[in-house]
Length: 258
Image 1 (cartoon, one colour):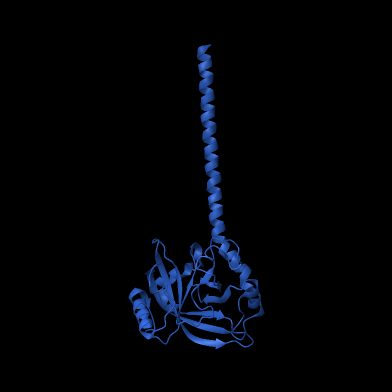
Image 2: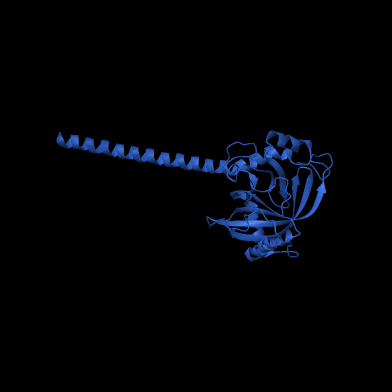
C-alpha cells in the first residue's frame, strides 16, 4: 500500500510539473505573439497616419490646397509640409510649446510611439530664420526620419539632392548640402538664435567639421539653412543631421502669410 501511495504521489507530481511546464510554454508563445504584434503595430502606425494625412498635402506649386488649410484648422500647430524627393519623408510639420510635446503625439494630437515631424520650439514657425531645426524619430522600416540614414551613403547623397518645404504663403525649394554626425548636446547645431555675422560663420565652420559628406558650394552667411535631425543607431546621444539650403522661394497666390 505504501509503495502504491508513493507511486501515485510521484505520478501526480509529474503531472503537475508537466502541466506547469505546458502553461509556461504557452505563456511564452502568447507573449512572443503579442510582442510581434506590438512591434508590427508600432512599425505600421506611421504608415497608417501618413496614409490618413496624405490627402491634406499641398497639391502643387501654384496654390496651397484647401485640404492643407483643413489640416491646419484641425491642428493649429501644423506649420508646414516637408518632402524629400526619392525618400519616404513626406510629412506635415508641427511645432509644440516645447520639444517634448510631439515626441509621442501624432499630427492630430493622438498618442503615438512614432510621434511627429516637428519644428524646434524656439524656431520661427514661418521659416524666416537663418538656421532652422526640424526633428523626427529614427524609425525602423524607413518610417518618419528613418531615411535620413540613407544620406550617409555617398552615392545616395550625391544623387538625391532635392526637397520641398511648403509653408503658409510660401514654397521653399531645398537642396541637400551636408550630412553630419553630431551629439545631441552639441551647442552649435541645436542652437537656432544666430544673429551676428561672426556667429553664423562659426556655425558654418562647425557644420563642415562634423560633415560626413558635403556637396556644392560652401555655405555662406547669406544662405538660409534647414537642418533635419534624427537619432543615429548604436549611440544613445548620437544624431544625424541633414543640412538643406533654401535655393528658391515661391510666393503662393491666395494664401494668407502669418
